[in-house]
Amino acid sequence: MPLPWKTILTNVPWSDVLGKAPQIADSAKKMWKGMGRKSADAAEIDPAGETIAPDADFSARLSLLETANRKLRTQILASSELIQTLSEQNVQLVAQIENQRQHARRQTWALAATALLASLALLLAWQPRLTEFFA
Image (tube, rainbow, N blue to C red):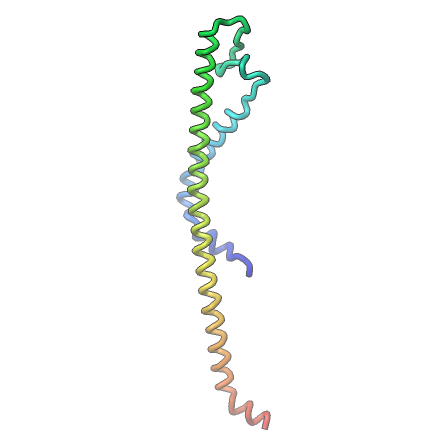
C-alpha cells in the first residue's frame, strides 16, 4: 500500500519546522565552520590562528591550549544542541507518521466494510433478477 504522502505532508507542523529552520541552519553553519578548520598539527596552532613557537614557555602554551579547549567545548555544546533539536523534530515526525499510518489502517478497514455492505446491498437488490436468470 503506497504511503499517503499528501496527507502526511499536510499534517506536518510546518510552522514549527519553518520557525526552527533558521536556527538549525545557523547552528549547522557554525558546526561546519568549526569542523572545517582542521590544522595539520593541532599542538602548533592556537585557536586564534596564530602559530605557537616551539620554544614558548609552558605557561603560554598551557593558556593557549586552555583557550582551544574552551572553544572546542563551545563547539561541542553547539553541536549537541543542534543534534537535540534535530532529534526532537525527528520524534515529532515519527509520531505524525505513526498517527497517519494508524489513520490509514482505520480507513482501509472502513473501506473494506463499506465495500462489503455495498456488495451485499447490490446482491439483495439484484437477487430477484439473478434467481430468474439462473432458473
